[in-house]
Image (cartoon, rainbow, N blue to C red; front, side, top):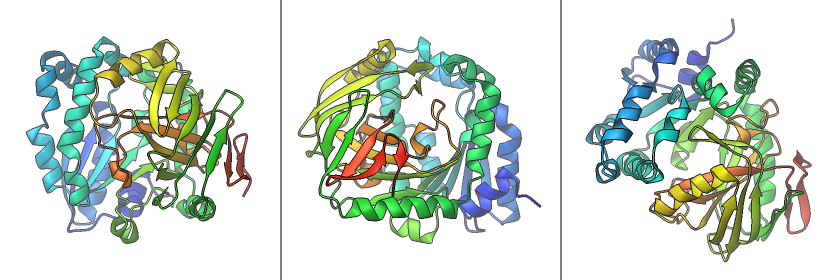
Length: 362
């Protein structure tokens, strides 16, 4: 008998035990899935709290609280983190178009407050987390981002079914190559041409599972669907241009092109389409090491498809991020972070091709 998504999430992904204190964050459109996860946790003897998060609640918070209040860590969020050992995230808002009503200042303040409430306490206590992509699949979100709802739902379901061992094997092969490289270069037809180093940085595999070995390595976050290799970039090493030209959903908008220029790891130019400039306004208002290169991501999931919310896990996808990377053992302070994907990227290690126009060749 095929396991349900709740059974996989509880028993395979986070491996919930009777000693766990679990919080399931959810919105009303996926109440049943949240309940199913809770029931599977109960079967294992765990204590569980369901924590509802609605669109109206989110909009009210961002509308009525001042920027100063939003920057302050929520007492409730902090206490949940302080008492949790595992957390499931079953979706966000139903309709991300509500974020179009918010000022960049409010959005930046909210992100700063959320980071302060949950991190570094979650890391210190080694709280395991799992984000379920299916919880983001809603018709209002599909409308906001102009996704085909049925195709998106089908893709998420298929990508979530890939064997974690298959994902781990492919990511490990890439990690072994990347680990010994002195210089990484990424180019693309869209204009990307950048060189940097990841020498000495930890390589994190997201295969959808957080096991005991992961916890000893501080790999505490997973997703379903999964399938990526993540690492930090040596912050002062990056020089060149990055063009993120795979459409990316952000705050109820779709960003189709971002252009970043780096000098010794510092972001010296931030341009792009209309929605990229909206993001830039939020970036300008944000805190933390927002103007430093942060992360490299390589996707390995053969059933994921680009153009939805899971660009970073698509097999052969190359992503670059800026801002905070402390959660991956980097040196950039949190406060703002954003990553996107380069279309048809070619990635070489000391001159040897690892990815050729979006195709893994190892």
